[in-house]
Amino acid sequence: VPPERIRNFSIIAHIDHGKSTLADRLLQATGTVASRDMKQQFLDNMDIERERGITIKLQAARMLYRAKDGLDYILNLIDTPGHVDFSYEVSRSLMACEGALLVVDASQGIEAQTLANVYLALENNLEIIPVFNKIDLPGAEPERVMREVEEVIGLDCSGGILASAKAGIGIDEILESIVATVPPPSADAHKKPLRALIFDSYYDPYKGVVVLFRVMEGELRPGDKVRFMNSEAEFDTDEVGVLMPKHKPVDVLSAGEVGYLFASIKSVEDARVGDTITLAKRRAEKPLPGYQKAKPMVFAGLFPVSADDFNDLKVALEKFKLNDAALSFEAESSSAMGFGFRCGFLGMLHMDVVQERLEREYNLELITTAPSVVYRVTPTKGEPYMLDNPSQLPDPTLRKCIEEPYVKLDIITPEEYVGPLMELAVSRRGEFKDMRYLVQGRTTLVYEMPLAEMVGNFFDALKSRSKGYASMEYDWIGYRESDLVRLDINVAGDPLDALTCIVHRDKAYSVGKEYVKKLKEIIPRANFQIVIQAVIGTKSIASERISALRKDVTAKCYGGDISRKKKLLKKQAEGKKRMKAVGKVEVPSSAFLAIVNIN
Ligand code: GTP
Image (tube, rainbow, N blue to C red; front, side, top):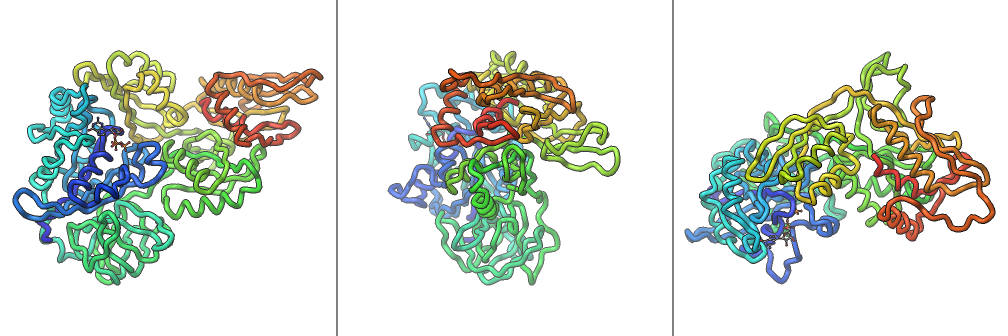
């Protein structure tokens, strides 16, 4: 097929606006996947994704479509992940396209990720086709939402399509519009040296790493020795093919096409998203622009509930890493928790997913310590360095300053929740930057906020204060100095290092108080009095006492709110009752779980 009959596009949308459902429909309508083979949401092929209804890893599919003009076209759909933790991957996959379907739920309207994704698409000069989805819903107001898109994004919606991915309305119009509106890839690029952009790579136990890419220039054949320009690794290609969405080998992939290769690559680290593939023999001069190495932003300790599982956890993390270049880990030992790993994640969702998959796929029971961001510490002597483990923060006399990462936060909310959300932002040390009327009844709030205040439960708090209606997006803006202190928790005089955290001085008191209160509820009584303290340096800022055991003590109830109590009971039922001996005191593992969410 000549390049002028290729269309490379992706679908961008806010979460839940129907991206996966629409992708399924397009695959069905083009006969790429027969209806009876259609598992719900073919593109989201990981279990966790399906259960949580979120797209994490992107994938691609090639569709053959006979258009109304009677000609056959190749439509390459490149899926994008829907979550901010993966925005770099979104930008890479958009760079592999010439156009994008912008899916907006016609019963909702523009949300934070709609905007973020549209801006990424516009930066990549994509042709955008607005699709107003879910018009089958009684509450759909496509005209209003269309006006919103025109007003807020400045996008001409005259070519917009009213659709229902669920009911199969508008699907043919969408396919025709892709053919008519999305520009074909440039036609003369195949003579140049190979440059192909990796937009996804994943580990397959049989084939090694499978690399998904878009050929921007040149040609690639099976047997070619390829070179990854940023990692500088070279491999002999075993197979080159297209995604139907199952693998189908081909003899050549030329400029404009989307495909896969495998070449006995052992780890995705050698073939990272965003890297440029060229030929070892005929190298391109420069890689494609914009390559970044995924940088972990959030760190936490992962400890096996049973110390015997340490080696299994190590093996599991090593295997996991083959498939996840963004995950980092190194062994860590804690006096409270024993041996485990300090792991780095792209963000909170990434952390949840990794932890859940380790537990599920490798049958491990894990305890995760409170997540922490990466601080920049300038010592009194020597160069600034990055610190991801709060228990390693040096004494104030040994440091000049600590800086913490900041983000710019964009919230979109119905105006009645502006008040509660502003309160929330202030309580998280947010600095107000802007408030704009977006469209009738809805407002954008802009804050600059320490990333540390967003890890933890910020997103849940945002949702609960807006009855689920607010949406958010954030962007990293750099490091700023803050008045931060290290808060240690001592139990019977021994530090619980897994609970050490770095907090803003103004919050140290309330966080410390909460910690000791929670611990008091959870630590069982002993035959001596136990003192629990929150300390900064040598100064105790909060403390609680657990009195010595008396004879008549029967089963002790937990205090705390119902949901936490239920959660703890559940964890116990799962056999997570192992005690961590801290000095003289037995601290149940659940204590750590209970405290992870305080910040
Ligand atoms: P993420 O994968 O989380 O980014 O979401 P998504 O944008 O892929 O949304 P998805 O396709 O999973 O759809 C979200 C929900 O909306 C699902 O429950 C769908 O069944 C439903 N849905 C999708 N399209 C339509 C539609 O046209 N009409 C109606 N009524 N529901 C739809």
